[in-house]
Image (spheres, rainbow, N blue to C red):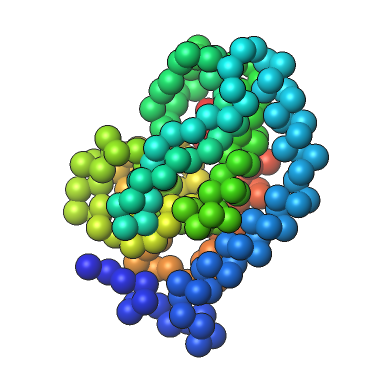
Length: 200
């Protein structure tokens, strides 16, 4: 079993879990404040795109294997649902939803999950229960940290990668975590979001 508390002590003497949490709270609070106009605009666009709720909630597996309800702006037509990862051209995705997915704006509500401590700004991609078996021996590693709003998978091709590559990226992140890796991935995320590569 790999443990961040044992393996990583490069956060300036601060316990790794405390360093991660401080970064999460500070970043999420600032972004929620700065992006409030974007939240309101996206919520209005989703509401006008057709019947159905503005927010979509889905159970995901978090730290310690505990379940939590991940929040997203709804990007599919009401009454439809799908896997955690969808393919390009999915007919269930609305026109507004396609724009939200391509720009990752659909994931903005997850900042609230971060503030609640259910997610981190950076971490493994949050998975659904049906994906647990596909992680095989890497699942205990996955549960060592909170899943992330962004992470190594998100800046390495996202849906253009294979599932095995995705699992490997999540495992590599946990094994090699550092505060500096989180800062690097947060910086890389801005570029990836602008490019829109692998976002469906």
